[in-house]
Length: 222
Image (cartoon, rainbow, N blue to C red; front, side):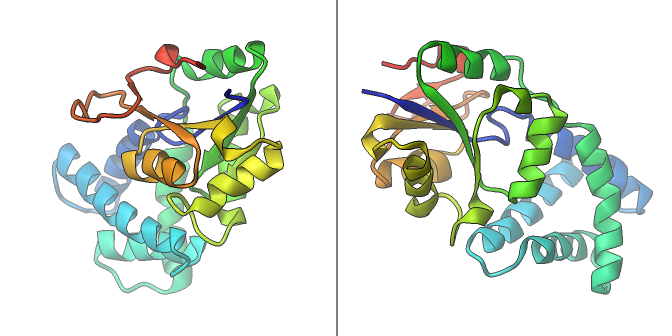
């Protein structure tokens, strides 16, 4: 019996990719970085994914991973202050682009109407992710937000999943994790004893053999 539904935040409830792509293209061109729109977005994603994974493994702090991304992407060996200033140019644009997917709020409301607990479990810094929830207007729902910065490591490590279940007062088998990452959200949740659903908005994983949906409207609680 499902008692709680955990949602990833970025690219599950909030359209992180669109905001990041638009922000980095404008920022990169201002900084004189060459490349097509697609090349800049792809390179920033590759750099960001690699260094963000180091943060999730606690090899870097949240601030250090930001600086590492900037230095590699821009090809600069700037000071910490210089890297922070450079990242701020990207961050301002990224935050301005934050928006939820149309199915996000209705789904959170539907979970609550069904008598279940809705929560967010995200691989991000707690303060930054709470700001996202507020800026996009989801904070008024009172949905608990559990961030990887509160645990020794991020998803797919089992500790964030198990920690969230403890805080919510449910057993792992009574919770389902919904997210866009087959590795971090789905496999991580399954390894921790939760159920899991892959949100494949762009139909990029047709070969996936587990529970898969393409919109949150398709989510079932049975």
